[in-house]
Image 1 (cartoon, helix red, strand yellow):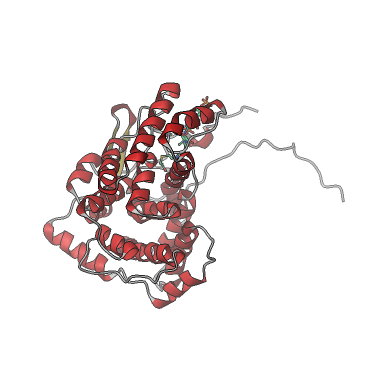
Image 2 (spheres, helix red, strand yellow):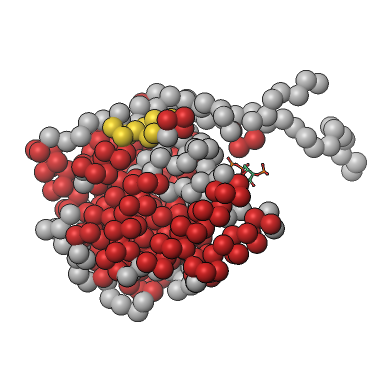
Length: 371
Ligand code: CMC
């Protein structure tokens, strides 16, 4: 029997076309609908980028106003959803809460199975609007604090920070947070987006697809890396110990979270922008120690292996310095990436084919049951 070539992890396999984003590792570039992410991060709000991903174009002022009105009107979590949060075990990971909440939103929606583009755009907006309310309520619940209601006079990023901390932080922090949301929003056929597209390809509903994507993002080889980075940094604690720590990890052939990438082999295109955001946050919060540690870890890794940091490396310490508990980092990633996921779910629906690859059997030869 001829054994077909197997592309473990689908590495290098082009599965489908997409008009949503383009990754060019050779030129270290990432574009959303034709715009460089750095350009979007410097000039746009998260809401504008969401519009771009969903509708293919940056909004006109009127379109932006409409999107913001609808987003702000959909922020409130209803009583049944908030009471569901309080029933989640105290020690479960916040990603479990987010995953359950989205699944519940689907169960609650009488039009759950309407997979028309119009319905899916409305559901995408609803999930994007209410997720920050859920994440912030869960963040405060874990600190023994009551939730803070969303405020319709604040933008997406400001409102979330206000719901977490009870005040809108200074503009440099809000901007850095918004930049992280824009950089996290979309990244072609990454594992969670692909999972969402697989679910959609069976003609299942958008909530099911997003639920699967959340479960996929949770892992430390994907979105969970931003948390792992900060756990490592907290363990190192002192920049003077960073070089020895990294050398030990490499000598033990252990993977260091926040470094390396399946697609970018010469550096993640999003890192310079997010590193600048980290520097801005550190300047505003006396976070110099974590910047020093960042530099030493990066230098040690690059000189030993040539492997460069990915986006999760600067976002980890940036979120920590903004005041978030480490376990909230990946749920924040969800708040952003849900825009990319839902854009892909809609695109998958536009030219669907059931995703059903083949496998090469490697088990025992056929045999007969002995009664
Ligand atoms: N630390 C140490 N060595 C590494 C790392 C790392 N972070 N990443 C890759 N390598 C080495 C790896 O050990 C292997 O060496 P060898 O050829 O000697 O066995 C070589 O580089 C190739 O690595 P690979 O794991 O086969 O490559 P991949 O394309 O499957 O890996 C990756 C991509 C992201 C899974 C991997 O780099 C990794 O595990 N990184 C740490 C987790 C992480 O930061 N994930 C976030 C990814 S970016 C954000 C996102 O998309 O969610």
